[in-house]
Image 1 (cartoon, helix red, strand yellow):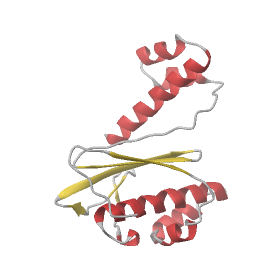
Image 2 (image 1 turned 90 degrees about the vertical axis):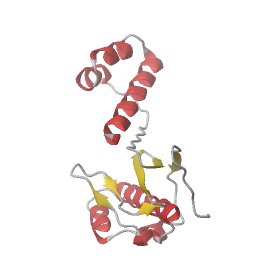
Image 3 (image 1 turned 60 degrees about the vertical axis):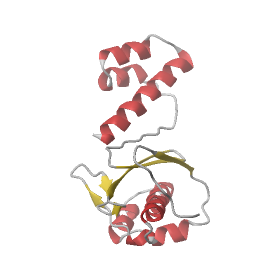
Image 4 (image 1 turned 45 degrees about the horizontal axis):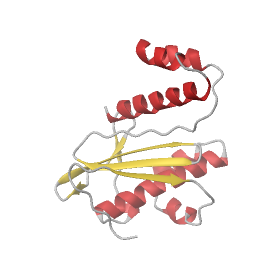
Length: 170
């Protein structure tokens, strides 16, 4: 894959579906010691694998944008744990965010902006009304509870990922 180019005002969105990854070993080799330590804290192998593939793919994409070896990308973290890099891209800060749920990983990249992205595996929630009432505003909760069946679940997840992405950007 060639180097990637970003322009001001443009967002690149990448969706990766986890599958048995033939590149797993090469992705794992790009991680820092602290990332490998974090990966090894996961109790289940599938969760370790998801973390390694997500973080390794992030490093691969950042390396392509920055024209650096993935292992040379320096990641730093905000007090709330959001990763960022101080590397500049043609004098611009490279903004990025990632989210993963189930077998999907979503990455977003842009220049000089606050950026948040979220993805959630859609699954039934027995306590959907309670979760909505404790996590959403009154108008959002009303919108969710006004409909039934699959439409209710669809609206719930649309609002959930929108709010999560906004919170991650801020």
